Image 1 (cartoon, rainbow, N blue to C red):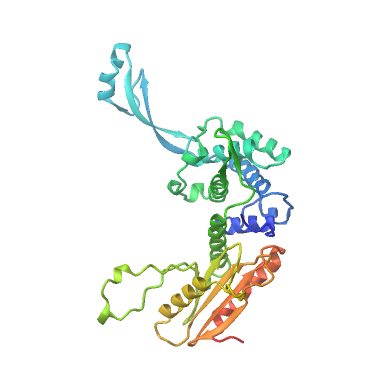
Image 2: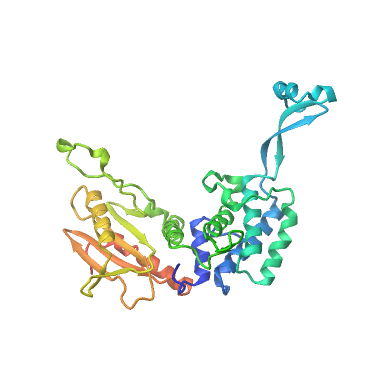
Length: 354
């Protein structure tokens, strides 16, 4: 379960950045509204977002159809026409395209709206608002949420507004938990750690993409800086994929975003330290990326702050490279959280700890 100290309004902001809808009209003020439950936030995003989409027009696409018709439409399927003896009824089996709203995108929307109405911890007013959306989706097939192929949903200019809506829908479905009753289901109160960690990584990366394109934000892989003269079995080396990489001139900052229930580890002797695996990972990334060996690459572990008494606060120089660990407090007003994120840029420009 995620840390309940996270401001629900900031979850919306993270979603907005992660799904590149920071300037969505009609939903921007959600970041300042109070929500008692994450499902309420998701429901409100869908109420406003789908409502706005209905006014603009639901996404439509050409869908393949097969039907027995009295007149020719599209292409005649001779094999099926003969097999079904359609000609004895004066009809033909035809294959044709229909420009309809019954697309996978709209099916996912309808499925999750019904899921929230039936099983979500959503207040009565928002449930009523969700129900009022359903008549606009009458022509859309209701499918089981678990059958939705999220990775198959594609986006382009005409349906870009669906990105946040379906991102929210995916998080709702992936939060589905079975109950003891085989015929029932309930939604978890909060997103899983895994889903929240992925959202947290994406949020930080897209924040810099939106506000600091001059830093060339991205998530490139770091190649291993091995010696070519002795390189047997290099295909077995694991990939080093960064969460966020920023660049300015000759300087590089590699950020490893971490969303954990506990951001520090405690040894059997009671000593509290930064997670060993996390620190070794970012150090490996930095050392392999710093091919000139001039200290131009820094590394930062950026944890989501928890309620633990001790928090990551590390800033050291390891063989000329600045390595550290910091936290972002997600339970503070957005402007203060944004100031903390902006402060990360100093790790790109500063070679050594101040």
